[in-house]
Length: 240
Image 1: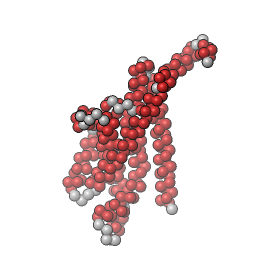
Image 2: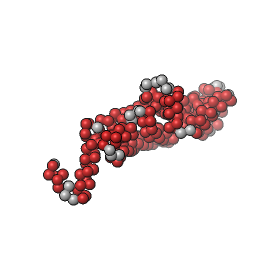
Image 3: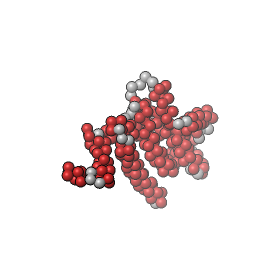
Image 4: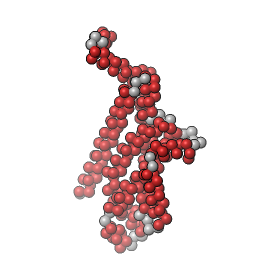
């Protein structure tokens, strides 16, 4: 192996390849830094999954509020979605960390809540659109069967709205996964933060950031594949 590296160093191209390998070695294998990326990915997925659970719960509530016949509930939903969708996620994260939960030492929890509240506003609009897309005849049919308004919503309208909203909802999940890259601002060591940490030690930003980007890309491609199969199965079930 040493002879091979000596051979590479005899040409300009070979030296470039050798330098690149040295950077990769320093980024991944020196001091087992590849484990940093694994831990960063783990935190990123924890942030994403926790936030999407919170966002889904908030989104369902806000969506139901938005189609409620009670004006104060519609007003609450409108204010929530307007404020959250109209302000940057970075600012919301910093407000949660520096103002609302300033005394908390659990940065992962802070980030999960911030991203969850942010995602909830988008999920609410996704579900509201799904609810509005359900034919009004479905509601009338439910009421004619003697179901109450809330029963018609939960048993007839909402299941159809959820199925309609799945493609957009899965896109929100992927967007949320990528948005967690700003969690490093509050010292959560997710993927991007790991890349920055390694950069500060190797004094080279290219390889750590590219590796981080490739991991994001691989996970997004995997999620796209899985969600794509789910959507195709749902379409087949609708066709039956």
